[in-house]
Amino acid sequence: MGVKIENLYFSYNDKSVFNNIDLEINTGESIGIAGVSGGGKSTLLKLISGLYDVQHGKILVMDAQSSTGRRKNVSMVMQSSSLFPASIRDNISCGHLMSDDVIYNACEAAQLIQWIDSLQDGINTFVGERGGQVSGGQGQRIAIARAIAKNAPVVLLDEPTSALDVETSTAVIKALEELTKGKTVIHVSHKPETLRGCDRILLLEGGCLCVS
Image 1: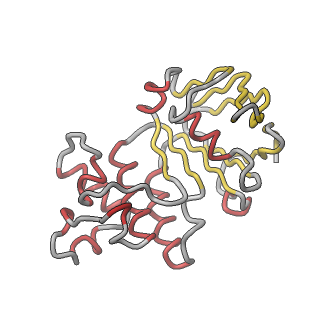
Image 2: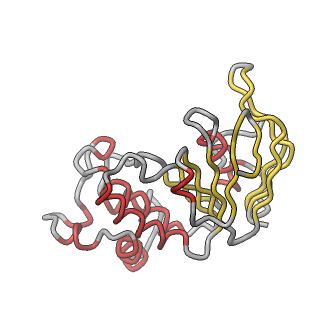
Image 3: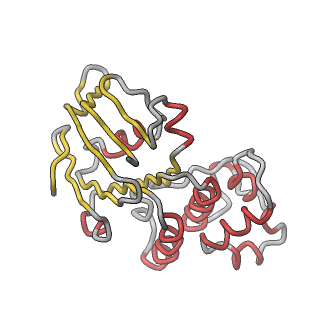
């Protein structure tokens, strides 16, 4: 089983967000979750990824239940790239020991090589505070390269192209295709049309998940 959620309840400051959510996702399956902005989609991904602790119920990711275990098994690409004030290389490796081949292959899969080769400092180029010295599309592809290099079995996508223009989105979508090959995928979006390639599409509404 890729991801299993049982009897999940969650609230912010006594405001209920989820009510008794149950979900099973097979290894290698791609799930789309649609819902309005502010409806809890990002919160659900943060719970699955171990960024938030479960208040009531159970979440298992590749049989890991602890927050630490779930984090190890998950790669996540958010709506806006979360880059550190460091080099492209360090943003991909996140301080972990990685060979040049792993980093290069991740950059190639994320459609980054041509751009990196054009930079004076190449992969050692500083991205600035919060990635301020790279464009939105470049930042997203760095985040995707990071996820590819991590090679986690479960990939979580939180509207990764919604803030990009059409041309940039095309390149990012190609990178996402490389990231998600052979992985268990959960893709959330407020635009159901972006989820058409998923094996199943569910609707998150009123704190509950149902078939779309």
